[in-house]
Image 1: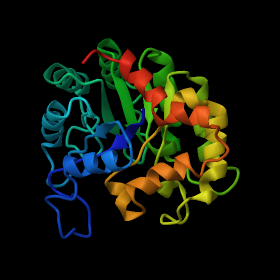
Image 2: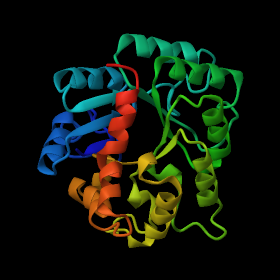
Image 3: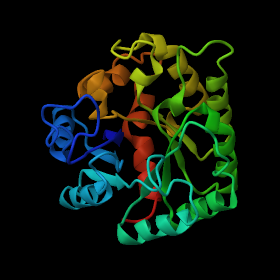
Amino acid sequence: MIIDSHCHAWTYWPYQPPAPDPESRGRVEQLLYEMAQNGVDKAVIICAQIDHNLENNAYIAECVERYADRLYQFPDVDCSWSATYHTPGAADRLRAIAERWPIKGFTHYLRQEDDGWLTSDEGAAFFQVAADYGLIASIAGGPQHEPAIRQVAERFPSAPILRHHLAGVKAYEAPPHEGLRQVLASAKAPNIYIKFSGFHYCSSVPWGFPYADTHWVLQALYETYGPYRMCWGSDYPVVRKAMTYQHALEAFRTHCTFIPDHDKEWILGKTLAGLLAQARPG
């Protein structure tokens, strides 16, 4: 069983420069084709209501209903590009989305700066809803957010927090590698998980498959978090600017030789399958 922990789908391609096929490049059918070609059984779609896609949550809800045996929806809730980002009422907005759709998790993208919201009363109310509904919190942000994320994890130990793309660690960060140190420190909270995805973001050469320059970071994360708290993800279709879906899979499966095969099975699907099974019933 392979489960992609991080991918997207849109009705209109949201990135620059403009694509020649903007109305088809990001469609869910493209994702399903890549999954079938590469033996990926299921995927979590991380919603992002950006550019022309202000109804991305609704589009993905329709897709999940059509392909219920293949897909899970983690809707965009107050992400960094939204007008409601860190404004009062976030808990009510998350509750409304959880009542509207049978979701097992949600996604929240943080802006670059730590504005203190995660540890505020509003942030606490937001994560209390996540805990009450049994939702997985898929959180995007860099290592600068780790101290606050640790506080959230400690306050809400029943709420799994799944960090996007190696939690934003960069292999080219200058010593003493404070970003990596912050992310490793978060391993003390047992409900913080790491997505083994976005190797091209970690690398100083985004097109440099198989990203050998990132392996020291990947190994440090693996040795600290272990396979039961890591989940592979493709970042499809955004990853196409750096590599194919197959490359995104094999950069981990074939080239992370420091991880034994039985642990790769956990990272490729068993860890996320367990989280989804324990999350809110669909």
